[in-house]
Image 1 (cartoon, rainbow, N blue to C red):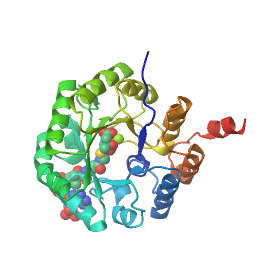
Image 2 (tube, helix red, strand yellow):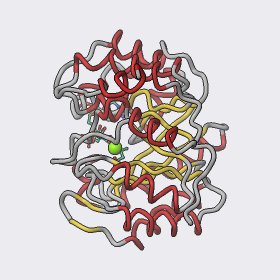
Image 3 (cartoon, protein in one colour):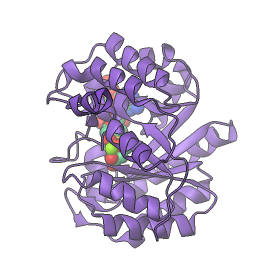
Image 4 (cartoon, helix red, strand yellow):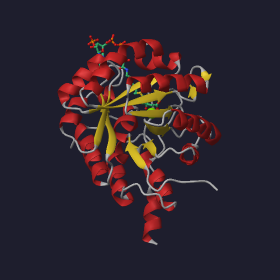
Length: 298
Ligand code: HMG
Ligand code: MG
């Protein structure tokens, strides 16, 4: 018989991963309303923006305003790729940080313009300083399963990168299927190995839903003992430097699936749908949530 946790933490990544790849410009005020409504729905941990080059990712150019105008309750993460990003984020008042590195060199070069080793070398002192100053640091491990340029990734290489971050003392590893190609068997095997090896670090799974295996991958990761999942309201998202990949698994679908299985998330699905409605008019593809309203009305 399979085992399931009683509680699961959802880390909402819609305002960051969800909006970074949107073609339509989303006004800062709309992003702030989206974040506020997500908080009202019970989201306590969220990636709200990223401090990256506005030339590379113009959608995140209002990062400073987003941090300044977001209620800093729970953990409101900002993504930072380098020293400059960390300094800007600290100046803006951020307190929880996410750094991101790809297992695959080719992806990392396209994403951050550095090899994996160069990124790790650059990040180490800054991450250690953040931790020393009492900040929470999550390390996002991209292309943990597949790379859009190199294909299948050896799980041993993913474990090696996780191990290095853990040796720095990061609080959390968010391990990502960047292009949404992993299957549930692969998810179980990798997350089982990660959970067994890194017992004192928070482990989170981050699934993109390109091949519609996101929920199945979450179910597989639950079996491996994972009880933290990144997801994006409305299923928006994708990395601009991972061609072909679509959005994250939709938060409303994850919350619905977990609640149907009597797993608590502390998230109110009705309020979450109200948050989705704030960004839906700006999404470049339709977001389908009508089914949940129909379900509720019965
Ligand atoms: P570069 O061109 O090599 O950087 O880009 P540079 O150091 O040569 O600087 C170039 C310019 O950018 C300079 O400005 C810098 O000041 C500026 P200029 O002199 O030309 O006016 N700059 C910055 N500005 C703001 N914030 C910064 C910053 N750094 C430099 N932090 C760089 C290197 C890392 C900046 C660039 O490659 C970049 O911004 N990449 C970000 C890519 C990105 O955001 N990707 C998406 C997030 S990761 C993701 O989605 C995956 C994840 O969801 C998990 C998964 O699914 O896999 C987390
Ligand atoms: Mg992602």
